[in-house]
Length: 114
Ligand SMILES: [Zn+2]
Image 1 (cartoon, rainbow, N blue to C red):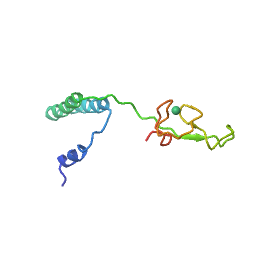
Image 2 (cartoon, rainbow, N blue to C red):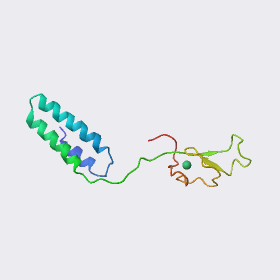
Image 3 (tube, helix red, strand yellow):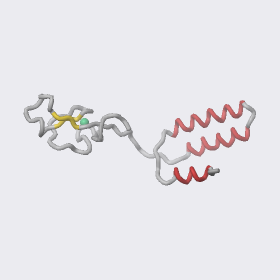
């Protein structure tokens, strides 16, 4: 049987950005249910976990916006193989397919958010 610590150790190998507010809300909700169910010890433990999450260091982070370079092969430009436009912001006339759009900052690894 695996121990809980094994999972925690695996998770600790790299920093993972999560929605701490959502995790905290789930744990607070769980603690309230445990309290209503007459299990104050477990409610206290889960409430403590919520408190610990609330005390963690925060970092400035923004969700990565993904885009891709579109060619003008639709006939919109006279040099369709030289110039590209951003699928996210529509910024036009780029001669290089940058890894990030210089106009909107989209990561040019494909549309969608994954
Ligand atoms: Zn863009």
